[in-house]
Length: 283
Image (cartoon, rainbow, N blue to C red):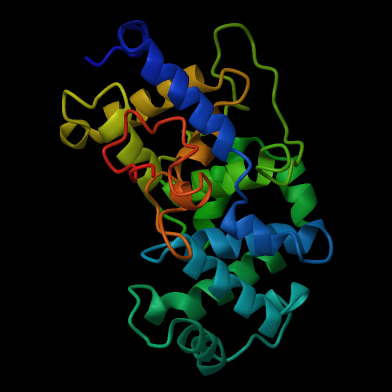
């Protein structure tokens, strides 16, 4: 069993550098929220956040941001959910214009996802009230109505959507949610879902985290998530989600290089410089 406490004790310099890395990259804008915040009104911002979260698959951060921006420019604000809905060729044309081809695992599903998010918004016409009046657990269940948001017990996209909606600004939209008070010993219904375990965070945990010597890739999914939850909290006690947000940019492709390199002047100002094998040599 990987011990976060022992790792922190045995690797104090790496742990401190990791905390500094989180603090440095915590302010990097989320690509989905960067576009969703342009929408007029909280309802539209929620709807576009949901759409961007579902589409966030098998493309780089900058590509997803460009696609969501292009869709928003073509179908701004409430056009995401008002009837009549755009035809599939109109939606698909935006994807082709953005990516230059149809070569994307989600291409055949984009129109269906767009329509499904729109249907969700019509079913819940006051999305702001929907978010405020539900616990995260209830939101997680409701989000299963959306095509490609996930139906199984593990729904990483639904978890990511909830954090984007509820986390305080600038990491999220800062929506106040219902946090039921339960009898002593009963399960707290307002509990947040597992923290997002992105590919960047997975790389970080495998290369520079507590499981780097024991094989993070070989761990069971539940143990990976448990380790992430614990270490994210250790890296930023006041807001573990800041850790999850910041670490998603670790060795993640950006506009011209890895996002972490772009934000640290080509690794020159990265707190992890002395520990990361991917760090560029300083001149």
